[in-house]
Amino acid sequence: MVKKIANGERVVPENIKTRYEYMLYIRHLFAYETVCQMLPAEFTVLEIGCGEGYGANLLAKYSKEVIAIDNNSFAIQHATKKYSSNNLKFLSYDGNKLPFDNNRFDAVISFQVIEHIEDDIKFISEVYRVLKDKGKLIFTTPNKKYRLKPGQKPWYQFHIREYDKDEFEDLLETIFNKVKVSYINAPLEIYNTELKLAKLASLVQTCDLLNLRKLISYNMKRKVIQMFSFINNLKDYSQKERNFKNKYNTKDFFISNDETRGLDLFAICEKI
Image (cartoon, rainbow, N blue to C red; front, side, top):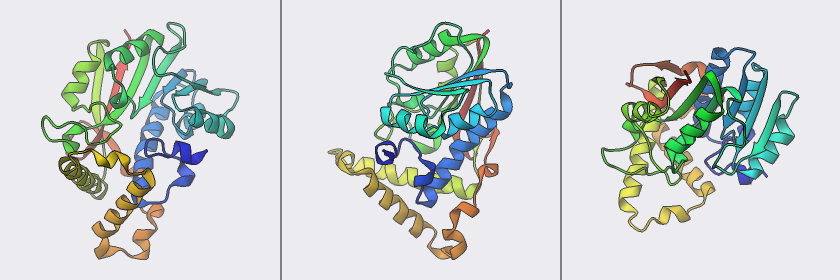
């Protein structure tokens, strides 16, 4: 079951094996922790693209009700078995029309999903429909400024498009009147690791004219990233460095309007 979920798109916490995977996990966990502190306890919350379910499980500890959906049926089966509770429910979703009535939720969150959506405006419109008046939408998505050169298509095979701050604001403002986009920032070491990996992936994209990288398995890509991380940190690859789970935590990340080390865009929209 875990192998069918952990394909590079959905993190399974107990399956984390590399320093880079752990950094990615706590970066996403930071977004969930931030939202838990923002939303009132009486809110009913929808999560779109819940993956393995660890984030929805955390949200349910701070919310009246959480419904979490994903288009990966194996992820939903796994999450239902591992996390379901009286106020937390997992449902399969076909990726099109949201299976809920109008004005159903106080808040909708969707982390690292919209870059995968073919019709992003339709997607946002559906979210708007199921939100109550004064309801909140919270998105995260990668900041393309550090990942892509001007005019470059996403090198990550599952991304339809990526956004910078202005593009994301313009998109959200086509549906919502009240929009604020900030950055999820990381400490310099974590940011530099992401930057170097983005440059490496971009170089591979340039050289791979036949798009053969799509034929490489996730486990093989995982080994390449692990080797890259080892070489990148060879100078101080001590026991402390290898014990990466003690070195980083969600407190290393922060939200600001400064793009200097902005890995992700963090958007808050309100239906008014």
